[in-house]
Length: 434
Image 1 (tube, helix red, strand yellow):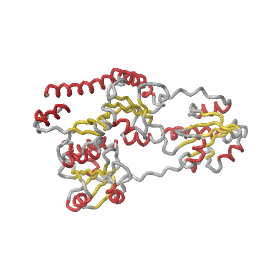
Image 2 (cartoon, helix red, strand yellow):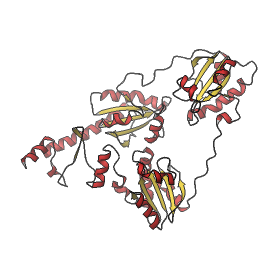
Image 3 (cartoon, helix red, strand yellow):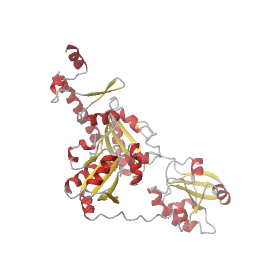
Image 4 (cartoon, one colour):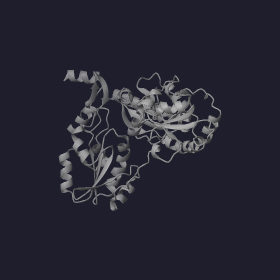
């Protein structure tokens, strides 16, 4: 009718031009959000409405046709009961970065092993599957479980696998090799004095010159520094006329001391003189530098201003605001980085220039996440960051693709211009249709 035609013209749609004869638009908070371009099925629409910025259903990917997609616990139990062939089950969450990276590999493995094995996938993130997760020890995503004749036998834990790796493992499935438990540093044969919340103040009163390393057991840079620190302690802590002693605090256990000195990153090295904190020394990372510095303690050079502290058009995000901020932007190029990373340092000025180029465009953002800060560590893990820098493109908060182009100004701006070009083509096409 005429009212319908007026409305279609107002919102710039022409259903008659579409193959299916209709067009679906999503509105949020009274304004247009995005065009619905997923399958017109009840299941897909419900999933979209629950999370409009989330990933499409895995089963909608035509390349995942050989993966058996399980929706309910009842369907899962039925599969285990009826299927004669061995089953490799991938329990996943739609938002998980590692899952997104592994899904194409899992799909390929499903196609290559079709007829001999069943590769199945199930989104178990909703709370209704908590019992299932507990039963099969699903503590993170993805978790792979191998079944024969309905019985769970092994976990598969190669998260860097290729499709061939999965296919080869299925020919001779073996349980994961038991991990040798790591001896806590404080319990190892080390000359370093390991302090606790209780012993900290007394130790500083008893030693007039102390170099102290705050660390976390999971921290890669701490692990790299430990042998150097141990070797320096072997010399300094055993000499009668030593210029100082070396001590360490596990900040994940002895939180009171860590909070007192506002420790936010690892390792953090501080120097104490006569019980008082004097310097923070980020430059001391090797045995020779530690010994040399303690023999003549000097104030460190002024710290270089962090990227976040420097004014620029790059939006610096963290775990607390990452998803909300990206949901508002049609095109977001995010740089996941570590401040110490040389490749990151090289890319930063070019990334800043690109952000400056598009600063007036409200639909575009160039954002950065420091993966070494607090909860950002877990965020970067979820987003599939395995090295620095990692560049990821998001569309209204939804991960779309990794950016692997040139890491210069031309590459960063060219990528965004191509996205804007596609937008303009769509607008032009709609105008022609009208």
